[in-house]
Image (tube, rainbow, N blue to C red; front, side, top):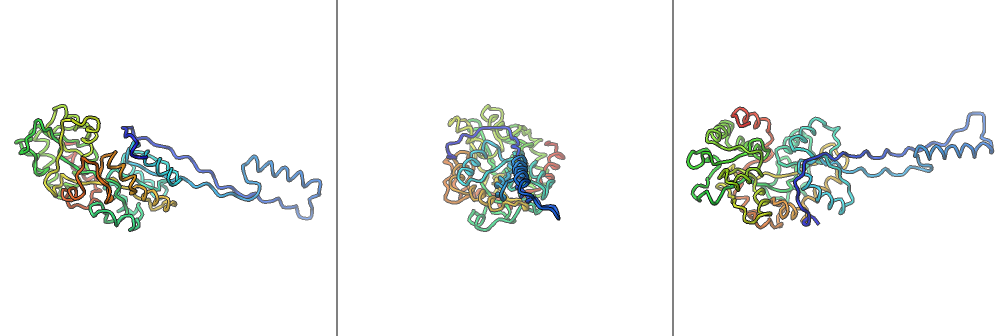
Length: 379
């Protein structure tokens, strides 16, 4: 069962697909030479030779057998420790084999663009909606049936209907309750540029993909100028750069910083090991872009020849078992109504209220965000 799995941090790696067996070819019976007949004495010798040839080459002696079904090929921007328990249960339940190539979401999205219709991928499971939106807008992902997408809450819908939201992740303000008073909690992420009380006390991770998705949302919601000014002002206000969300939560616990911009589930992972870990987290005011709710999601490539099996995999990702695993073990928000979120997560109505009104499919311009961060000196 998925709920009995343990999530481990692993280095993304590629699982190389094995080549499927070539379809068997029928062997034609030897034709007699015109004007000559096969004598009774020679026929058994030739039959023996044919049988020997079939044995050596692997061709069937009588008729052809059906080729074995090829496995689904999944490109996964999600980590192996999260994905493997899902695949094991899916394969056990359906009998459909899945081979995986792991990598960064952006890296795999670029690879799919470069490979085009020659890509072996049937499915792409991405860490965020932006990469899926870029591929959908280029026609690389197939449209999905309404039976899959319509039942999801509006916040998880795609305007292109070419990606399926599998779980949700919210941006939050994490802080030290020992060093931060309630009146110091910012109402908006834009307020963090103020010298009092935030100068030298805030941590961020400019090289991290989830932070870059947030900056893309900031550009979309408030425009290029506001985004550039905010990034520049954060640096002038002494924002401390860390490599990722985990390092930020560690720095909060160690007293290096007092505030941090992170995804919600990292603190829950720390609390899973230490329920008394000295960090809290909150949303900004309802609708603030700092509360961006992004999704991990999956889509089917337009060139896939195994669409029905790929759809079966997407259906499994929405099953009660998989959705419960995502929220109870991975600490993400379920995308299917009726699945109870982890006790430390807000209910769906609270998440909907906090989230900004943004089309996640528009968060595809990572190149523009990287350029802005470089020009502002954050990278």
